[in-house]
Length: 200
Image (cartoon, rainbow, N blue to C red; front, side):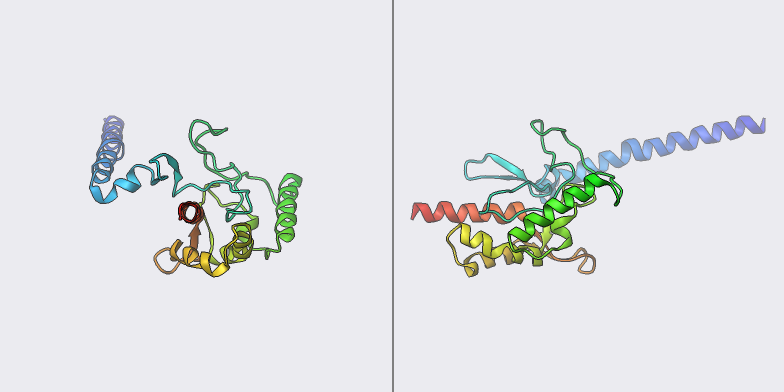
Protein backbone atom coordinates (compact mmCIF):
# COMPACT_ATOMS: atom_id res chain seq x y z
CA UNK A 1 0.00 0.00 0.00
CA UNK A 2 2.82 2.39 0.91
CA UNK A 3 4.58 1.66 -2.40
CA UNK A 4 1.43 2.42 -4.39
CA UNK A 5 1.00 5.75 -2.56
CA UNK A 6 4.66 6.64 -3.21
CA UNK A 7 4.32 5.77 -6.92
CA UNK A 8 1.08 7.78 -7.19
CA UNK A 9 2.74 10.73 -5.45
CA UNK A 10 5.76 10.56 -7.78
CA UNK A 11 3.50 10.47 -10.84
CA UNK A 12 1.48 13.42 -9.50
CA UNK A 13 4.61 15.50 -8.87
CA UNK A 14 6.00 14.60 -12.31
CA UNK A 15 2.76 15.66 -14.01
CA UNK A 16 2.66 18.97 -12.08
CA UNK A 17 6.29 19.74 -12.95
CA UNK A 18 5.69 18.79 -16.58
CA UNK A 19 2.65 21.07 -16.67
CA UNK A 20 4.59 23.96 -15.11
CA UNK A 21 7.84 23.67 -17.06
CA UNK A 22 6.57 22.15 -20.31
CA UNK A 23 3.37 24.11 -20.89
CA UNK A 24 2.67 27.01 -18.51
CA UNK A 25 6.18 28.53 -18.47
CA UNK A 26 6.75 28.34 -22.28
CA UNK A 27 3.28 29.82 -22.91
CA UNK A 28 3.99 32.63 -20.44
CA UNK A 29 7.30 33.43 -22.17
CA UNK A 30 5.56 33.31 -25.57
CA UNK A 31 2.92 35.79 -24.36
CA UNK A 32 5.55 38.13 -22.88
CA UNK A 33 7.44 38.02 -26.19
CA UNK A 34 4.36 39.35 -27.97
CA UNK A 35 4.49 42.62 -26.01
CA UNK A 36 5.65 45.34 -28.45
CA UNK A 37 8.45 46.30 -26.05
CA UNK A 38 10.13 42.91 -26.62
CA UNK A 39 9.37 42.32 -30.32
CA UNK A 40 12.91 43.06 -31.53
CA UNK A 41 14.49 40.60 -29.09
CA UNK A 42 11.76 37.97 -29.52
CA UNK A 43 12.29 37.89 -33.28
CA UNK A 44 16.04 37.30 -32.97
CA UNK A 45 17.30 40.91 -32.91
CA UNK A 46 17.65 40.74 -36.70
CA UNK A 47 19.35 43.73 -38.29
CA UNK A 48 18.30 44.83 -41.79
CA UNK A 49 20.04 46.98 -44.39
CA UNK A 50 18.70 49.98 -46.32
CA UNK A 51 16.73 47.62 -48.57
CA UNK A 52 15.11 45.88 -45.58
CA UNK A 53 17.18 42.74 -46.24
CA UNK A 54 18.47 40.92 -43.14
CA UNK A 55 22.21 41.21 -42.60
CA UNK A 56 22.48 39.23 -39.37
CA UNK A 57 21.48 39.15 -35.74
CA UNK A 58 22.81 41.67 -33.25
CA UNK A 59 23.14 38.71 -30.86
CA UNK A 60 25.30 36.53 -33.12
CA UNK A 61 28.75 37.45 -34.34
CA UNK A 62 30.03 37.23 -37.89
CA UNK A 63 33.44 36.70 -39.40
CA UNK A 64 34.92 39.89 -40.87
CA UNK A 65 38.21 39.54 -42.74
CA UNK A 66 38.45 42.73 -44.80
CA UNK A 67 40.82 45.43 -43.57
CA UNK A 68 37.91 47.89 -43.77
CA UNK A 69 36.11 46.13 -40.94
CA UNK A 70 36.70 45.64 -37.25
CA UNK A 71 37.41 41.95 -36.73
CA UNK A 72 35.36 39.87 -34.32
CA UNK A 73 36.77 37.47 -31.81
CA UNK A 74 37.50 33.98 -33.17
CA UNK A 75 34.67 31.44 -33.22
CA UNK A 76 35.03 27.70 -32.79
CA UNK A 77 31.76 27.18 -34.70
CA UNK A 78 32.53 29.87 -37.32
CA UNK A 79 29.49 31.89 -36.20
CA UNK A 80 27.10 29.29 -37.58
CA UNK A 81 24.00 31.13 -38.81
CA UNK A 82 20.96 30.10 -40.80
CA UNK A 83 20.35 27.33 -43.31
CA UNK A 84 23.31 28.26 -45.51
CA UNK A 85 25.82 27.90 -42.69
CA UNK A 86 27.63 24.58 -42.26
CA UNK A 87 27.12 23.19 -39.72
CA UNK A 88 23.79 24.85 -39.01
CA UNK A 89 22.36 26.38 -35.88
CA UNK A 90 24.95 25.30 -33.35
CA UNK A 91 26.59 26.97 -30.41
CA UNK A 92 29.51 25.82 -28.35
CA UNK A 93 33.21 25.59 -27.92
CA UNK A 94 35.72 23.21 -29.49
CA UNK A 95 36.31 21.36 -26.20
CA UNK A 96 39.97 21.02 -27.12
CA UNK A 97 42.34 20.60 -24.18
CA UNK A 98 44.95 23.34 -23.63
CA UNK A 99 47.62 20.88 -24.72
CA UNK A 100 45.83 19.88 -27.94
CA UNK A 101 48.02 20.59 -31.01
CA UNK A 102 45.01 21.80 -33.05
CA UNK A 103 44.16 24.44 -30.43
CA UNK A 104 47.79 25.53 -30.14
CA UNK A 105 48.05 25.78 -33.93
CA UNK A 106 44.89 27.92 -34.19
CA UNK A 107 46.07 30.23 -31.41
CA UNK A 108 49.51 30.56 -33.02
CA UNK A 109 47.94 31.49 -36.36
CA UNK A 110 45.73 34.12 -34.69
CA UNK A 111 48.67 35.56 -32.75
CA UNK A 112 50.75 35.83 -35.95
CA UNK A 113 47.92 37.66 -37.75
CA UNK A 114 47.47 40.09 -34.86
CA UNK A 115 51.22 40.75 -34.69
CA UNK A 116 51.31 41.42 -38.43
CA UNK A 117 48.51 43.95 -37.96
CA UNK A 118 50.38 45.58 -35.07
CA UNK A 119 47.58 44.78 -32.62
CA UNK A 120 48.26 44.08 -28.96
CA UNK A 121 47.58 40.48 -27.98
CA UNK A 122 44.34 40.67 -26.04
CA UNK A 123 42.44 37.61 -24.81
CA UNK A 124 39.19 38.37 -26.63
CA UNK A 125 41.03 38.62 -29.96
CA UNK A 126 42.83 35.31 -29.43
CA UNK A 127 40.40 33.01 -27.61
CA UNK A 128 36.87 32.02 -28.62
CA UNK A 129 33.86 32.68 -26.42
CA UNK A 130 32.08 29.83 -24.61
CA UNK A 131 29.10 29.99 -26.97
CA UNK A 132 31.21 30.54 -30.09
CA UNK A 133 28.64 33.16 -31.14
CA UNK A 134 29.57 36.26 -29.15
CA UNK A 135 29.22 39.40 -31.33
CA UNK A 136 31.27 41.59 -28.97
CA UNK A 137 34.89 42.46 -28.42
CA UNK A 138 36.15 44.68 -25.63
CA UNK A 139 36.34 48.43 -26.04
CA UNK A 140 40.14 48.25 -25.77
CA UNK A 141 40.34 45.63 -28.53
CA UNK A 142 38.23 47.83 -30.80
CA UNK A 143 40.59 50.75 -30.17
CA UNK A 144 43.51 48.49 -31.13
CA UNK A 145 41.97 48.09 -34.60
CA UNK A 146 40.95 51.72 -35.07
CA UNK A 147 44.00 52.88 -37.03
CA UNK A 148 43.89 49.91 -39.43
CA UNK A 149 40.19 50.41 -40.22
CA UNK A 150 40.56 54.19 -40.56
CA UNK A 151 43.48 53.77 -42.96
CA UNK A 152 41.64 51.18 -45.08
CA UNK A 153 38.60 53.48 -45.36
CA UNK A 154 40.60 56.68 -45.94
CA UNK A 155 39.18 58.22 -42.78
CA UNK A 156 40.74 59.81 -39.74
CA UNK A 157 40.59 57.74 -36.54
CA UNK A 158 38.64 60.53 -34.82
CA UNK A 159 35.90 60.15 -37.47
CA UNK A 160 35.34 56.50 -36.52
CA UNK A 161 35.89 56.81 -32.77
CA UNK A 162 32.34 58.18 -32.07
CA UNK A 163 30.88 55.02 -33.64
CA UNK A 164 32.97 52.85 -31.32
CA UNK A 165 31.63 54.79 -28.35
CA UNK A 166 28.05 54.61 -29.68
CA UNK A 167 28.09 50.82 -30.06
CA UNK A 168 29.86 50.09 -26.80
CA UNK A 169 27.57 48.33 -24.34
CA UNK A 170 28.21 48.60 -20.61
CA UNK A 171 29.08 45.91 -18.10
CA UNK A 172 26.40 43.34 -17.29
CA UNK A 173 24.41 44.78 -14.37
CA UNK A 174 27.09 47.51 -14.31
CA UNK A 175 29.33 45.07 -12.42
CA UNK A 176 30.32 41.99 -14.43
CA UNK A 177 32.73 41.79 -17.36
CA UNK A 178 34.10 44.61 -19.47
CA UNK A 179 32.32 47.07 -21.76
CA UNK A 180 31.84 45.35 -25.12
CA UNK A 181 31.55 46.71 -28.64
CA UNK A 182 28.97 45.05 -30.91
CA UNK A 183 31.03 44.45 -34.04
CA UNK A 184 28.12 43.83 -36.43
CA UNK A 185 26.46 47.13 -35.47
CA UNK A 186 29.76 49.01 -35.64
CA UNK A 187 30.75 47.64 -39.05
CA UNK A 188 27.30 48.31 -40.50
CA UNK A 189 27.48 51.90 -39.23
CA UNK A 190 30.75 52.28 -41.11
CA UNK A 191 29.13 50.92 -44.27
CA UNK A 192 26.27 53.39 -43.90
CA UNK A 193 28.79 56.21 -43.53
CA UNK A 194 30.50 55.06 -46.75
CA UNK A 195 27.16 54.93 -48.63
CA UNK A 196 26.30 58.41 -47.41
CA UNK A 197 29.71 59.73 -48.45
CA UNK A 198 29.36 58.32 -51.97
CA UNK A 199 25.92 59.87 -52.41
CA UNK A 200 27.20 63.32 -51.40
